[in-house]
Image (cartoon, rainbow, N blue to C red; front, side, top):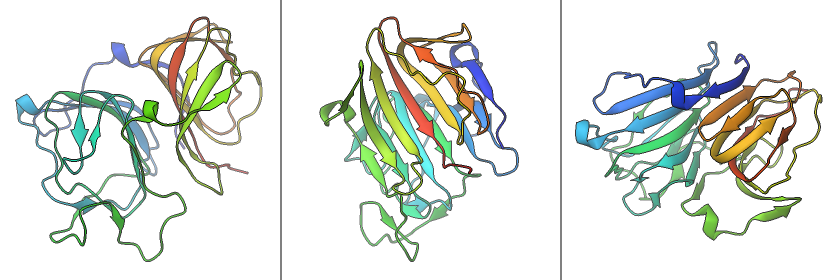
Length: 243
């Protein structure tokens, strides 16, 4: 299980270089047993970074939210800030990947990432090589702001990807002044993860989460209420229930 990360200011973290040129990363949280992890990645094509040159798939989930820059898996659908994609296990993608400029993205994977290349893909759009399609299907949202959002009390919500049975998934939340999450002190039955894209939030423990701040609360944690004095845009992810 991943350890709790009550507060992490990613702006204060140094970039690590995992090896290949032009690729930098900040590890935000990780399960040491499964390899499940969340990281903030930075790609610099001017330093020689090259995306995978052929279609491929992974044996685990891959989930990306763009923070800065521009990138594509097929050189047709371009992902820009707040764009999102979700690849279930064994989803063939990366037909003509391109990163033309410095780009940052949040990356979530379910275990250590493997690469299985497909020399002759049967089509040039994502497809599954598994025998049965996954319950949580592939998702691409190149322009979430151009799609309908759900109106809440002092907030709007856009569902990026959702498992229809477990409720596991990710959303974008835009809050207004006076918004509150409520439910302070509630025991979590699933993990909850948050990254602030814009604005800031105040937590019931006195912590302020501004742009670039992150938290991960594992199942069994005690929920801390959030409030918004002005406005904020937050990327939320929740896991499957543990009970």
